[in-house]
Image 1 (cartoon, rainbow, N blue to C red):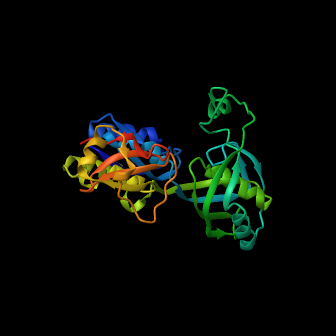
Image 2 (spheres, one colour; image 1 turned 120 degrees about the vertical axis):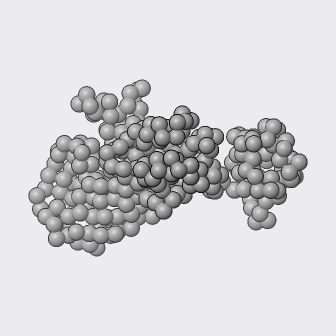
Image 3 (cartoon, rainbow, N blue to C red; image 1 turned 30 degrees about the vertical axis):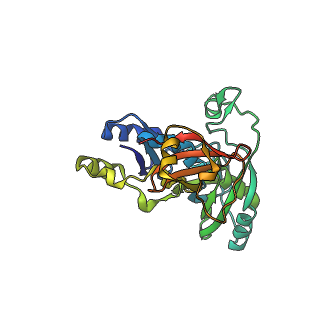
Length: 305
């Protein structure tokens, strides 16, 4: 079974738990997930099955979208409600206008300091391992991109208001940290109360199946009908078409002359750019890299029949 299985991850499960469960259902080992979700987070978790595991790294590079609930007046050591409260403000007064202005400040490229409870490695050790030992170490800030951020709802009548917002962001963005930083912009402690991933690898909730549905469809022999082709999850890469005879050479892992490529008239390519390669029958041949100097397409990941 090859392709991408879009799973709606339930709360309380780790991404590894989901992979293990699906491995048991499908009785196959070659499964990888495209982007870890914390146990308390629900939402889209693409699982790459069989040969589709070869595109995991490219699926992960694509923007992701979330819907988050931020609670003002509370700060925790984990930056979400699973942690220990380290600061509290019993009453918070804030306006919707101030919230919208704070959100606007985070649009575009921003700097984030990874939370202590994260999988980032410092001197060979995971930050969460150090945090569990009661240690706090200095972390280097990282640049991430917030493509879009919008206010959905603001429960301002609460003593500790809850703010619901949506965000489209780059790989490596910590929404927990974003919640804390939004609170800082408002001048109050804040933490993430809830998080749902609404899109990953271009896949949305509408394409997802629950673990129960996956088991039912597998037992009925119908699960393969719900798989997403590997190349459909990497449509951010430009597509190039070559004649069928040239495609056969590509499947052998040979370099292909750019002169054989049939691409969009308005397409412009960069050196070392990755593309999706197809033959004239629309069969996906693999991921190739453009070498402008040699005027060839070099194989990176070949998807032989």
